[in-house]
Length: 143
Image (cartoon, rainbow, N blue to C red):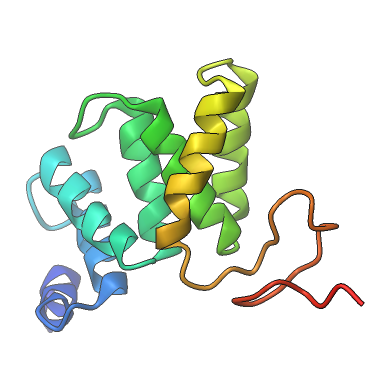
């Protein structure tokens, strides 16, 4: 039987964002490979830019903690926000953590949310101010 890393690696060549995220996990944890935070960051970034919410949350964590990249709280918040809008409750907790620790100004949080919009492929959570209605891909009917 082939190791899990090899199975994911074969799917990466086809541009599979889920596989890219899992290769990031392998490099982050050192599962079947030497632990390499820079490679983990690169795989998470590839998955995140394709709209994969797990990859987005992981990339936010990398920026948040400075793993494989210098710490960047605005970028961390941006990726957490994209993941949250696509249904990740864990990403919301990380966003709240940055906010509660006063790591970002309200202006920086709004900037991060605006930047995240291009990476939100399948919104399942509405933005604040839209009555908290759930929707997929478009705003809920306001009638």
